[in-house]
Amino acid sequence: MELGITFTPEAHGKGYATEALTAVIEYIFDELDAHRISAVTDANNQAAKSLFLRLGFRQ
Image 1 (cartoon, rainbow, N blue to C red):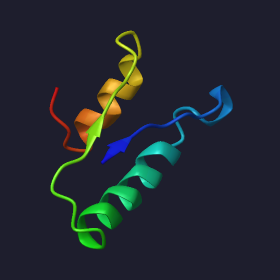
Image 2: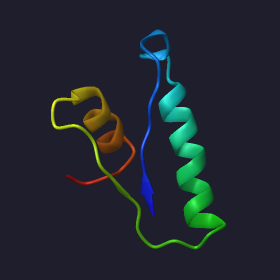
Image 3: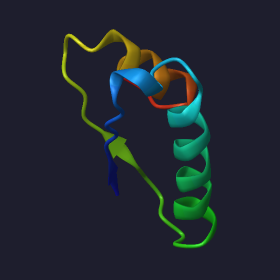
């Protein structure tokens, strides 16, 4: 599985991405029985990198 996110600047910093991705990740592992999820971010997008690291992804 591979995940990606896009939020408008007005939605940044409000926790929407964390909430949405947490629910999607739980669904993928629990309901779809996936064993691995990957994510690709822009190398300059520190916020996305931090988000995925907080959610348990490894770099």
